[in-house]
Image (tube, rainbow, N blue to C red; front, side, top):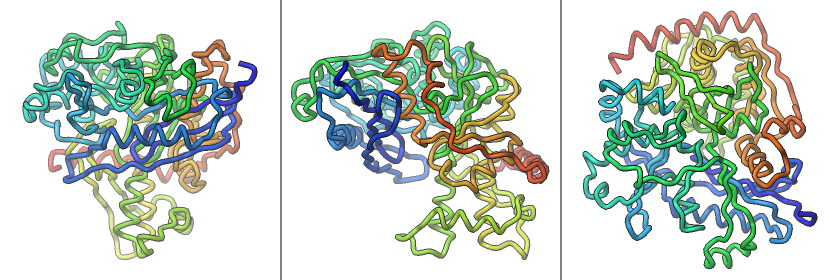
Length: 492
């Protein structure tokens, strides 16, 4: 390995595919990013083209221009909950139905309210919701029977990429544990969940640890990528679990908050946890590392919605940093204006696909910038709502590691610190999921002994201290935030 100087981590998100070149000590050397189109013909449908994503992966690897003799490994991080139907010929017969798709809401509710719905949630660790492939497959069987009957395999985006490159259906524990079909205790597909979906185990991929690697890509892609056949492709994991790893939020009391298009808060534990109230997820990273937390549907997408529809800047010249800076002149708490940010329904802690966005408390003195700040506060309240549930299940959160696009905004990160009343730490790069994937590849090829060795690579760039006066203001608004949802949920 003496001449090998580079790792490639590929982070497949909702908005883009990022291909990032790391050094063996996890310094980012270069990156290439390719935007992805999401097809939303109506509020319920969210799909992407699997072939567009695959082509973005190929273009990204080539765009980094790494001599094959210098490449240590390629690893992956990927968004969770996607579903692609494959026929017997190995062709995709559907788009990738992504996490934001809610067409299966009725089937999710039926499974959740069934006699063994709670048991399936606790064994699989995945809240029963339209995001989960469990519910999506049940919906396909009932409402898209022609596609269902032709489907030999039901796979995720990452599985599709590995099938194209290696001709094998393989999935890591981390992605599998976000399907609602995988038993996180037994590390195998769950029979009761399979029965609810109406499929058999052989219609799913073979499961492996996140450090599993494949070599020998199919010849046509070997020529296209100019990669040596011995280059290891490390399976990696889900973007959420890897974000904790990439931010070094792996000790008890540490939480990772990521806000991009959506958002999440997660903690890592040595043992899986069960929430009797079914508010949080319980995913597996390795057999000794579980990731507990919850995701919100409405993160940066809520700010984007406001900027595109409620702001007076030219839509083609949006500068989000300038837009966000305007909130500095608005007092925390926005003079009582509260926003429920459920534009796309909501996942944790409510798991309510019917939830809607609401502005409450509007008065004659509120301006456009009050509404802007209320949107940003509402997103953080959504994260805080999950954080409170997490503390009930797994213990106190002592500090927060922040990542994702929002971590570039000092105003938004300070808001997070003030709402939680906790210190928020920012690492020296924002590519947390990709960094996590790179760490996994170092473990897979034997350059680190254990995942905890990442502390040697982590550098904190900035610490945000909470303002306790602001925290008290936010506590008052948050109490009303929670009450509003409870009061309105039956009307949604």
